[in-house]
Length: 448
Ligand code: NDP
Image (cartoon, rainbow, N blue to C red; front, side, top):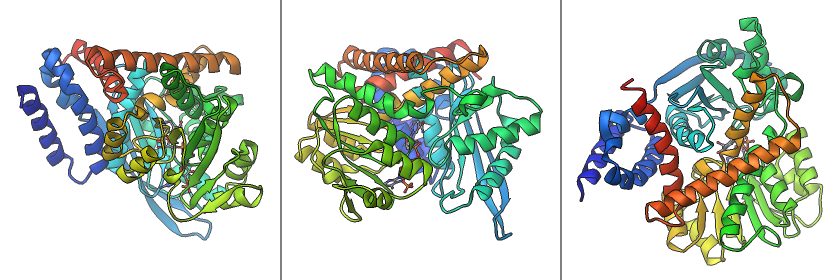
């Protein structure tokens, strides 16, 4: 083992001890550190000044009580989090997740990934993430509004246009951003539109933000396919999830001529051999807030499954767009056995390390989340630009900017992988590209 291996293993073992019980955070750090070994071999100065240890330690972590009253007058106490991981490149930027599985380790994994993703976009944004273990499912609109107001009553003192700019994630869409923004405005007596992204179009929101993560994931995948002389036209595609990212990944893939043969939610998965009726899916999920069974009931040719796995379908492309670790080694092997050629992560860390190994060992072209799903945060940064200049860009212009950013993320990840002798390994390429920019900024700014 080389000196660098020893050094990196030592950092990692210390990190495991200092951050016990946070397996998702460990997983995210392990992947990045593994990619960085070849950078440190080539440019040992990146290990100077405790750079790696500082990179893995959040600049600030806030945890707070969120009391709220349900419709039946019961008092509930949820837990709120904001992890401000790294602001070397710009204000902390990253979404808020409301889901019962949320804990500090999950927010730290998401915040850590966000540093490199945001760096990859080429825009001036640092990395952060937040959320709560509040479960919005089955809650009335009034309950959700009161929860958001209580959450913001603490969060507001930690955020700001130049400090930290949250956005949506699982369980936080346009409705929740509206309630959060309203409370921020009330508390501060300022219409500071740059404090949150994902806003409504009449009060500072940007066109394309809703579509951005899903569209961006498809643009990234299309670049991967182009590299190998292929395209979405005529391809069969699996998309897991049916939330914000999944819906717009399905829409764009079908616009480019693909057939999306399956999608899912946590209650089951749907086989759609003739493609997805996107307008119906939007109605079921975005308007009625229904389940996948409601989609199946309202159309023909779609089959609901409540056992087995969506990854057993036969497709050319798989886009996991639901949640972390939803695709394991066994699932990856099924996809490979059925001939999948491209996998790109719309969700954050949906593939386990074993799954990624299976893809890479079998020649599947694999786009990691921090590159493939960076379109959401990139368009959030475009929203910030529009807010700063009090301007509103057209759909076409904003979509074109998104498209160019995704093409550039793909190109730089591919070129960096090749430069380091790992051609086609977009995991290594994305990690190193994202890392170098942040690391250079941190070294320039001294030990802070
Ligand atoms: P949403 O809440 O809109 O949708 C999440 C979807 O995933 C829902 O359909 C949900 O189903 C489904 N899901 C959750 N857990 C499971 C599971 N165990 N099995 C099957 N389906 C499941 O969230 P988003 O679409 O915004 O986020 C999805 C992923 O994309 C997350 O990993 C997020 O971090 C990532 N991401 C999101 C960005 C954004 O701009 N929104 C940006 C970059 C990344 P159900 O409703 O039943 O829970």
